[in-house]
Figure 1 (cartoon, rainbow, N blue to C red):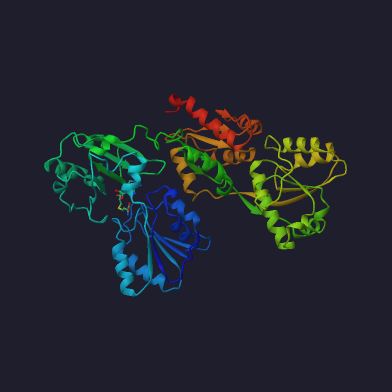
Figure 2: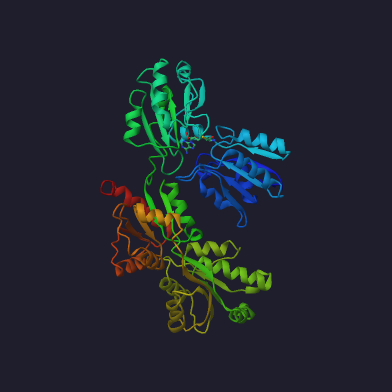
Length: 517
Ligand code: SAH
């Protein structure tokens, strides 16, 4: 599916309740092309990762301790940006037209003669009910559903609706923005005739990996939600259907639900591991302790490329190396055939995938993802005597492979370093700041360099008030480095690959439920 955004048009887009998977395909396509995105608090900022690099994002919500930007200023901003001949997304949590004040924005755009389109989103009531397993309607129990708001708009603190009227409706009540008014809402529903034992559920941060639910009755919901200190954003469901909720709490009972896991890698490399763990319900803090910076000499590139077809093997030790190499090659030759008939060897599966994404076959991937295993595999594969090998690397960790191929294999090895690892300034990294105060259930190390970088950045942390993390290692090599730094290893993957590492992480948490809590 494709969708082409237009300049000068404002797209009022629903961002859904939190889980980025719940935006519509159209919403994602529009976000990917937008020039400007104006968004509020309830939008999960992860969806902003889809923006093109040059897009501007403007936050107009309420940040802690500050008032939100007044609605007329937001309206004026929309008009101003639309006149700049850019495509604008006005991104709102849930559905833009459900308690979202989009109506006022639409009026403004109408009056200013600005074109707009509206893309609906999944509203909190629908999404939270699904993620808590509550059927909003059910034969013989409830055949109507009412969406209500505790405040008429988020800036007002007074209650405008009379909930007594809804007590007699026999409908499932879905109450937005009601937490601050819970006592009055419950009081009025009881006064209106609902029984003390009417089932109630409150879902906080629904569809996020920190979702919590409080199941109770009208008679007890106030004390029980206070005991759990339930806070906004949360939605209240009132009605007998709450008791028909599914036995299996499919979302909150995922095996890693409620676990916070630090993945000490840059976003691009952490992506796959994070995704696998998120599918099992873990909350992932990705922290790029180091970042990759291009670093190469033009002369070296020129020399290597002149003879590129003469190498029998091209060896890649990381997916970063792969991507940079093919970028440079493309700039130089605009033709993939320039590498001739060279065979390709890589250190591990992720690097292999990077090569395959350039439609090239990988001839060799060792069982275990490290330099020694790669050297073993190459030496075993064929005699390397006088064989020309190009080793595409970063600024680190290539010595061992280079020496073994040259000394043991007696190959002719040329090195092509393309990037270096640089330390990141973490003072503004939100995930790292959270890790410093809250800690995490565990840190997953996927290479020796992730251990070194983690240690350098966290030496002074004592986790006095947060969770002291356990350490998981992807394999023997990484464990060696953990031991050198005196970091206790809670679990080690039997094979150094992501799938095995995830399985090991799952079984660690399954076997250690009590100790961790
Ligand atoms: N337009 C939004 C609603 C905005 S009003 C929508 O369609 O969902 C804000 C209220 O929505 C919050 O106070 C809360 O009651 C509800 N809400 C939004 N996101 C939520 C979430 N992830 N979990 C629980 N409630 C949520």
